[in-house]
Image (cartoon, rainbow, N blue to C red; front, top):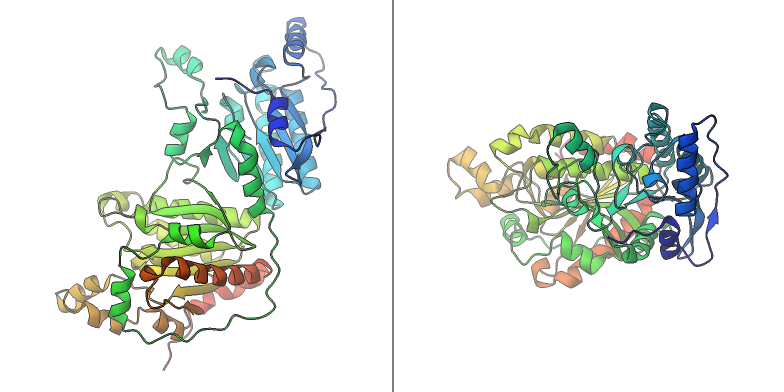
Amino acid sequence: MHRLSAHDLIDLVLDEGSWSGWDTAPTYGDISDSYEADLAGAREKSGVDESVITGEGTARGRRIAVVAGEFSFLAGSIGQAAATRLVAAVERATAEGLPLVAAPVSGGTRMQEGTPAFVHMIRISAAIAAHKSAGLPYLVYLRNPTTGGVMASWGSLGHVTVAEPGALVGFLGPRVFEALYGKPFPEDVQTSENLYAHGIIDGVVGSDELASILDRTLDILLARPQAPTSELPQPEIPDVDTWDAVVRSRRPERPGVRRLLRYAASEVIPLNGTGQGEADPGLMIALAKFGSAPCVFLGQDRRGQTSDRPMGPGALREARRGMRLAVELGLPLLTVIDTPGAALSPEAEEGGLAGEIARSLADLVTLEAPSLCLMLGQGNGGGALALLPADRVIAAQHAWLSPLPPEGASAIVHRDTEHAPEMARAQKVRALDLMAAGVVDRIVPELPDAADEAEAFCHRLGAVLEHELSWLFHADPADLVQTRALRFATPPPR
């Protein structure tokens, strides 16, 4: 695999002539003659004075800070001088309010410096945590190889993390593993593609695609929509029978989250998994923009929920990652409910499904970011409820929410499923009833059925999402948290 130098990568990603370095000459103190010779050889081989270079430039006109590793300098290893340089750059990016892009490539901490270099990973991680706490994006591009203390610090803290195709990415290098345990490390485990398959990174991206991905990501993260000056009118919603709405919501042709994003979103950057080794196809996580309004998007994906693999606890752990991202990035959170129900299985029980529902509810109620919920279709049980608490709730006309599928409620009350329509009506599951109860704030009409007008319906829905998200973007999260839980605790109408 051809390895780009740090400067080659910077030239590929940043606008021509925009790079300005931040680095000063490194200092090492009292070091051995052999280590000094290693440093001199590394400087001559690499053309740089340390394993990390830092600075700023513009990426398609947007000013950003960059920290990039240089593998040809002692295998990109991080000693005390490189760590000090990294921390200074991160702190400067934070002070100047700049998004930070990191491109690590390294075998880990520098063995010639031992533990004093190793513990500097704490300083680096603390500086990045402070940068993220300031609401500033931290984006990571893992290169070949990224291992050891670098992967276990600044390589694994990104809001969004992608990696080079085929890159060796992992904690313990395979050569070290073989030396310690006397057997080779299994092939294809520490690869970009395998980490993506396990929900640890968000994508596998070639260096030639990096500038475009960075531009699209920053287009969402740095968007600043104008606050709406007027309220959208609520169209009149026909009084469609509850069971009719349930049946329509189950039509295979009904648009789900993927068609919603395809037709209604102006930009989408799909993310992947929990970042902790888990991904569930029943939930889609993304950064998205509807018109000019950005958000972190969490959508239950009907296409990914099958009878043999229903939405499990991993989907809610993935959703909770999205909740954290919304807070850290200062973006509204958009959740989309569209599920026939969470998994009912031994695996789901052992995976802590009930606990994940509870934690999702608690996280959403206390979320220090504005939130919007869209009820798009079926809303079955706790798996649906887990994404409901929000500052605003909008619903498609034939969307519904129920403790159990109507057939299940009928089985409990009547010991058959024939009374499902009657139970759905009695339980007031449809959007119109939920609006009357104060749960839903706005209903988007289907003319007459979203399944028959998918593109037009999604565009209509997208306009409402842009309006709601733009209003929420300018709201104070602290004020919203005070009232969020109360909206679901109002007395029932007499």
